[in-house]
Image (cartoon, rainbow, N blue to C red; front, side, top):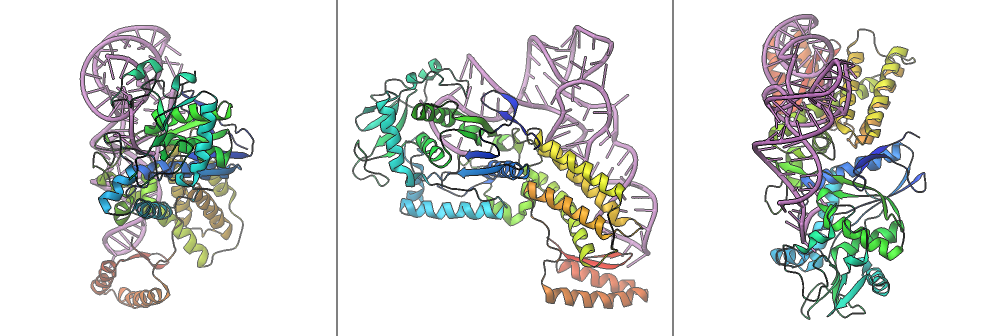
Amino acid sequence: MRLLRIYNTLSRSVEVFEPLDPPNVKMYVCGPTVQDLAHLGHAKTYIVFDVLYRFLSFLGYRVKYVRNITDVGHLREDTQVDRILVGAERERLAPMELVDKYMFSFFSDMDRLNIKRPTIQPRATMHIVDMWEAISKLIEKGHAYVVDGNIYFDVSSYENYGQLSGIRREELVKHRVEPAPGKRNPADFALWKRAESGYLLKWNSPWGEGFPGWHIECSIMSIKHLGEQLDIHGGGQDLIFPHHENEIAQSECITGKRPFVRYWVHVGYLTVNGERMSKSLGNYVSIKDALKKYTANDVRLFILSSHYRAPLDYSESVMDQFVEIRKRVEWCYARVLEALAEGCVEGKPSGEFSGRVDSIFEGFIASLCDDLNTPQASAYLMELVRTVNTLLDSTRSPTRGDLEKAKQALADVFEVLGLKPPEPWGGGERLYLVVDRVLRLREEFRRAKEFRVADMIREALEEAGIQVEDTASGPRFRVLR
RNA sequence: GCCCGGGUGGCCGAGCGGUUAGGCGGCGGCCUGCAGAGCCGCUUUACAGGGGUUCAAAUCCCCUCCCGGGCUCCA
């Protein structure tokens, strides 16, 4: 098995990836709070972990991947109101109606971006009892205390607090929000909050009616579905503090096992004009809007064009560059599929071609092994495309073996990067026959040197979304996207 | 204030001590009736600025400038 090297936020260095129980890998990624439409910033994070998931599988690991849905307890800092309730009020829906709407919207976005479904997608509200069992344990062990129906985690009871974010406990006395009365230390965070009588999102608990804190949810869902120690835990860089810092504290105090997570992986921001894409700044593009203009492959190639930990700036002019790249890559693959479908000379692949493809593919894999260097891996994809195009253009007809070799390499690269393979013809059988007949007629005009008519036909087809290319072996056509 | 990241050719972006990154765009060539696609070449001795270290620095060290992010809201 080839070794993956990956950056661990905890050690701030690239480490060799060694799961606790190979070949099994336990991976947890913080999912969205389903309060509104997901945007391209979310897409970046989930596409990166999708590639990690696919690549680990390619390397031979058996990955159990959990990505949660947050449907309660995530408060807005300014108003201290649950984000789900804010959304529900905005759209005049019941809280769980809103949750359903945006959860299914999120699932649909993920599917359309060709992001593989995780093994389990747990919802916070389905784990309330597990949460208060864990909270009881924390109180028993002296890591948490109750104040008037609220329960706080006592940060001073956990000596390693701050290890992930590098924030020192003593600095946390500064705060932007007025600390809740009764907290022993401003840095203490809520595990459970008391709810007033008219509050919509609340559950019974041993401490009266209330709802869970945001951080405890991920601790509980990850422990429940993956066990007390995880191999990989990830999310956006924004989650390092306080969310992930708090998760470590809670989880290690609950289980008594250390480390809670072996490798912490964080994805850099998607920015717009240098600023983070976010709901609050209003500079976001929803995944649905992006997919009106661009294909899933455009978006994936764009997002994978920079290193996952680096920031990536979104703009339409840059996206347009990736449309060109995507066409080039897809058309190369499509040509291989067409050549195979049309029948070709039987025979084994030439040693030279086969060797080149193998060495390019090896470079591709080595790039991904190097802290998931997708930009370099993309460069190998482009080299593969050039090599395959050269084969297809060569005067010697490629053999079936050559074409199968090319197809296999492209298919593997597409699979690992999560690119959708092109459809050889996306227009249906009837349209295919019509265009085929029209082009046969056009060939008559071309043979008769009636180029004006031939060009008119070609332009008319192009206007209708069908691109025609005249090649040495006759016209080719495809549906434009 | 305290902590992290960054500044690479027209544009996007790898590289992080010696080797052509790659792509987009532009220009030229091959091919073609033309176009498109593809391939080849050029644009490309680029690395914020100034000092060092070194046989050798985009890469290491120091200083300066600029940008982004975190410091209990966000993937």
